[in-house]
Image (cartoon, rainbow, N blue to C red; front, side):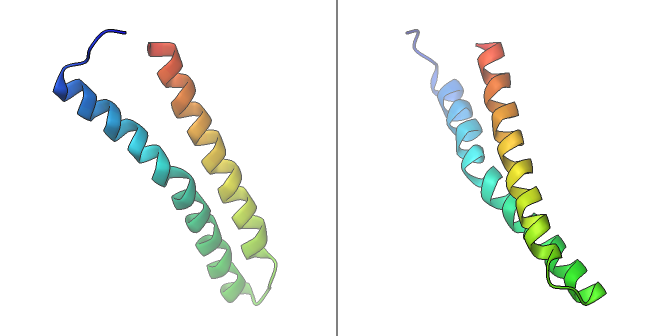
Length: 73
């Protein structure tokens, strides 16, 4: 395995560290959108639907980032 220079190592660490926040952020955003729409329309099920959409979006984005990383190296 070739040794990365220190700058490259920090860049790689930053890329993978951001993946740790990608999925929880997508879940929280989906829930908050659903919560806001529930308050706006007076319903109680939209937060669950948007929570699942946030989970799906987060998983898709993590897979997209990891497959992009596999394609480049």
